[in-house]
Length: 116
Image 1 (tube, rainbow, N blue to C red):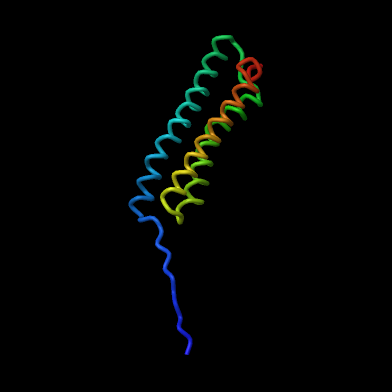
Image 2 (cartoon, rainbow, N blue to C red; image 1 turned 180 degrees about the vertical axis):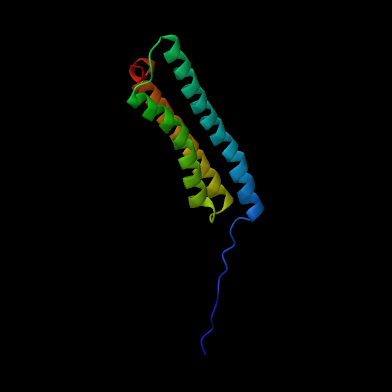
C-alpha cells in the first residue's frame, strides 16, 4: 500500500484579492484620469494655437490611456492565484512601470512633437 498525501495550497482569500484589486485599481484609474486630462489639455492647446494633433500625437495620447488599463489587467491576472504579498508586489511593479512609461512618452514626445 502506498500512502497518498495531498498537500492543499491555500491561496489568498477572494475578499482580500478583490480588496487589493480595488485599492490598486483606484491608483491605476488615477493614471488613466491623468492621461485623459493630457488628451483634453493637448486638444485645447492645439485648438488655441489653431493647429491639430498629428498621428504620432494621437498614438501617444491614446497609449497613455490604454497602458495603465493593460498593466492593471496583466498584474491582476498574474497575481490572482498568488499570495497577498506577491499580488501587492505585482501591482506596485505595474504602477512603477506605468509611471516610467508615461514619463518616457512625455519626455520623448513633448507638446511640440504631437502638434502639426
